[in-house]
Length: 144
Image (cartoon, rainbow, N blue to C red; front, side, top):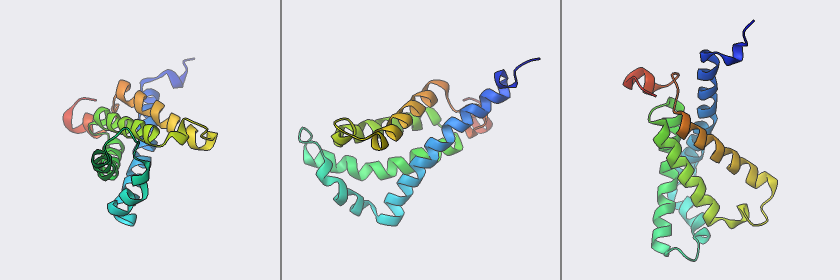
């Protein structure tokens, strides 16, 4: 008897289930920052988190971009369209968050660090494996 988890449909479903929660998380983060709270409030709330080594105008520019990147990358990941590029964008945002907010690395609790590490791992997996066949990439562009 063959193991059904070693089948191509199981691999396809696994890729979809990797991509979907990462996309939903970033889509919801972006939606909340853009439409519920406003980008200006997001920037004002996090402008104190810009690291000292970064010129403040560049840090503010990055802060203005993050909610939009989250919204766009999350949408693309959920749809499975340009998923590798979207996962790369989410990975860069996660790295920016870890650099700008050192509590994630210095004395951060398990509860603050664990989701970020999980998101980083999922983003790497999507970058390496692609969107899979359960995606718009496969449906529209014919590739994953």
